Image (spheres, rainbow, N blue to C red):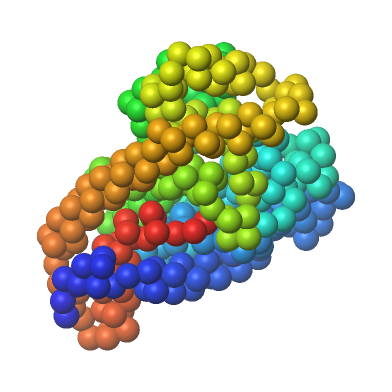
Length: 365
């Protein structure tokens, strides 16, 4: 059975179908492990973000990778739940740090319940993720469980360092960044926990504790950077209904996106001075004219083709990811065996990986 169909031939329907199926399985398993006994405003709220409409990309990628490399998705289900829990904990803490008002089309936890409640719920979500890491020892054995623990620690460390970079740039009003700085932040903040960690976890479950978990790292890095650029673009030009978050929220928060870096590089001295002056204040301290500043920033970004430039960069990263995964899949042995369903699932998982790069930049949320 051939797996040669390329991403264009397979397209988004396959990706969306697999995402929906694996999201349903992961969320059901995640909710099953949330403690029933809880003080008010704690464990029941850890189910809030996972239950909201979303792609479920990270957990699905763990399951798909395991299946594509000959493993059982059932054995990877607990690691996938772990991925999803840490992801949602990051989202809660991000919403606190960014002052975000919307998440997946509804008010964020800090907007609805206050920072104090949201911070505690984020910590509790991390705790539930840690409990799932511990559960691997019983289900997968001590050696593999330890490897997955190491991967989790590495992902958390890289993600926190990436978040620190972004927070520090805003806090210190750093305005001399380059695209290289942005990509370094993407590698740490986005690529590690969105692509590298799920892929490495799924690969370990499929092939065992002694496997080289870094084989998909280049694929994950390219996809993570493209994913972050597309997310930044949607924040400026997406629709609130589909995007599910505040449009232009990144500009309100002063995030150093690739578009903002391009604007600072291309603007006239007077324009650059206005951008720097705007970025020197926090969202909470900006006066009533801030909305005019945001509209002006959007206008200047359009004038200097900043969005188009970022989309072009994302397209280049997607092309690199496609080349990487095509080579990896081509080197895999043909799926075989008496279980026709298992063979079909392996083929489907490989086609998902081949189609994913194109989906990353075509998505609307």
